[in-house]
Length: 398
Length: 231
Image (tube, rainbow over all chains, first blue to last red; front, side, top):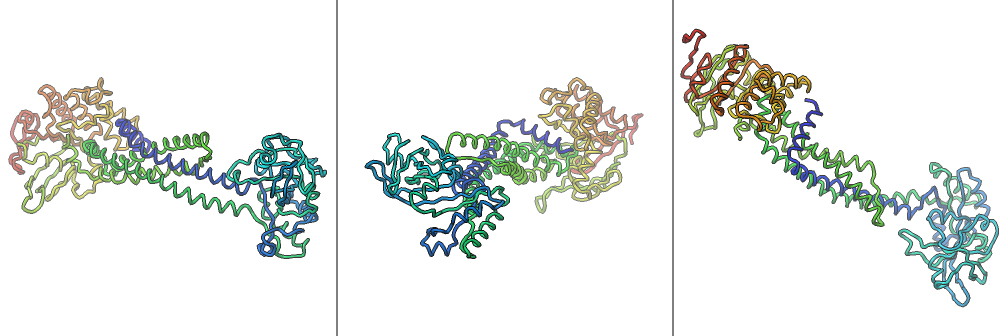
């Protein structure tokens, strides 16, 4: 008897008891779909966390070694990155762009208003805004020409706009930092994502303007945008070599690779997903026991059928296979419906809630294989029971 | 074809043990039409179950076509039932979910036959028992006599050399019973060995040879020769 025929026979038996089969499958359906949804939400959360921490794109960051940090009380020392360093790094074949950031806290004034301790950033490109998906909600972003000349324009974030201008239009107004006048050219939309609510009052200007305001070119953070993700390691090594040569040191510079952070995040979220997924898995287990229960009832109900089949030449193995295939078919159908339901719910979660849910193909395949395995495991006991029946007893049943 | 030597069957052990068959010696040759008679509880059904390889004896030997089948494993006995024995039961024992043709196909499924060939043989068998117009009917849509004819079609579809019938007319009215007995007669004419169990002397009279069992022992073995002589 071919496998396909056995499956057909199983489908007929399942169809013969529609209501019961549907209720039995329901356990598997709920189990599989809840596993898929929890894993999807876990995966989506991981993606979102990774993006929030590490940003996207091939960015690596050059930082002082731990010793240098300690000696300077946790600050990047002045002249740690020089203009010469930047020009050198830009020459590296793997490097697409060198992104520098200077920051310092300062008091900001507008007419009589005064804001104490705002963060003032000097940047050499819009890269920082691009990686964090930030846009202006009013006014204009820095243009390439702004980075060329030393124009006195500034972008302020939403919080600064609220505190300094109290609802009035800040565009074109003049604010003062260190008595240096700056024209507000734009207001940034509030930052989305996990860290949005932690944002402090912030002013952005080009690196040249920053140098004029604070009278120095000190760079606090240096990131490299690498041309190709496969060149991350090489680019980092060569950049650190170059900096060591320029500064005649051997161990003051190091690469902070976002990969490590990403790895850490996926480890944490992975554990969380596993824990929640296992709880969902328990419902799958309960569903499997439901299949076993119904199959046992089915065997008892169909003893006469088993007897008839044996009398016309079915071996015990035939009987066993028949019931096994029936339970596997039942579980796999339930599993497939569960996948559809799980994907559907994940999409709904995506659509209706801030939680992102990413369904992955391996989880779907795993779910099908798993429900198949469940069919075998939980079909084994009933099938074995069926195959051990005495044909004479079976035929005596009415 | 069949040789039973000192065949015994005991149910249970120790003090509560019941001897159902107490040493049966019986030889059935190829092509015979034999009836096994006896009152209920005489052990005739047990005897049939052993002959049909559905049960095993406790003592003695059972040779089917010269082979000791009680020694055979389950797999081999299942194949023997499939290939060499056709069963007809008192209560038909059809699968209610399947139509007549599907019921008749059942032994062929376990013989590993292709669906097309199965269908062809099943149709032929149903035609032979006169049910060509009832092939797609469920058992519940058939009369008792028709159901029993489906069961006979199922028993003969694999062309087994031995047909075993346990009270085949027991649940039928006289007219339907006659049809069934006529079919047996035809099968016998075709060379099939027919062994029929019954407690009805009238039914038993259709056979060529009559074996009487009482309390688990063979008490009488009569042959009606074609000319009516006693063997």
